Image 1 (cartoon, rainbow, N blue to C red):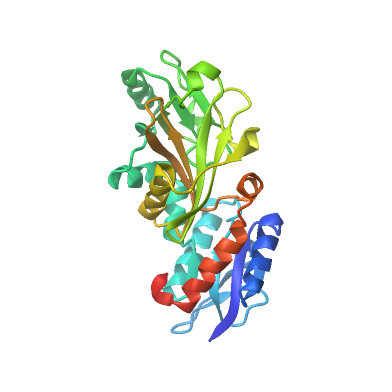
Image 2 (cartoon, rainbow, N blue to C red; image 1 turned 135 degrees about the vertical axis):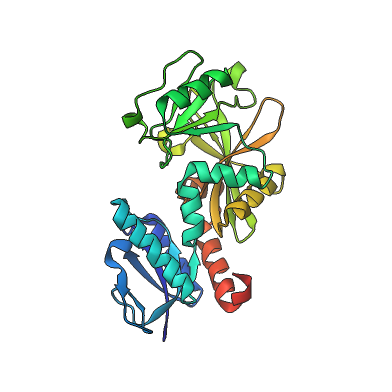
Length: 302
């Protein structure tokens, strides 16, 4: 039995989830904001069901805004719930497969490279000595990022000759990406990159993020967003990147190098959109709700 509801999974009800809920209501659907910490399984032979407070039966759809932080066991269980929901015929946006790819930067980069999309040279190693040897052989500056992480936290630039940090400082995995100087960075000392928001195979909004100073361009780290065109090379590349990782909606980060070539840096399967809304005026929540309603009206489009 299905309940005509759309469950919005998030960590806590916030600007994003409330705005999305209102947009979903405007599409004639019933939103239900919940944390994945409240959800679970009721399992019996031939009669498995999801347990979500306030929900009778299966929802029509699940929209994954955020998966709360937790233990390995908790995260595994939450992803399992999303896999199960999809297996039972629920439309899950984004589904567990896309989330699993995107939360692991190494797998994201692998999928981009496998699809033939331009992305910076990336090295992934567990042992410090192996990572150091690969970094030294590269011979140029590289960006060291947490394998799991967002909002520019824990990101650092390492220069040739520098010693990599202890394994405990990087979660036991070294993810190193060749540093790409953005077009005009060497002259101005201020970096910029692009964030393109894709939904259902199209770019709905884009902004250029400019750092106040230095090379980190994340909005949460003080960068400022300004509107950008959504009909050019960057937008087309972002759509291809989202497709490569299997994301129904995504925030795709790109950089334009000194030769004017765009490269994909990351794909976020649970992106925030407040900064994009502010910079561009695009009502991302409305776009997401419309796309979800379209999917439910035409299941073959999912």
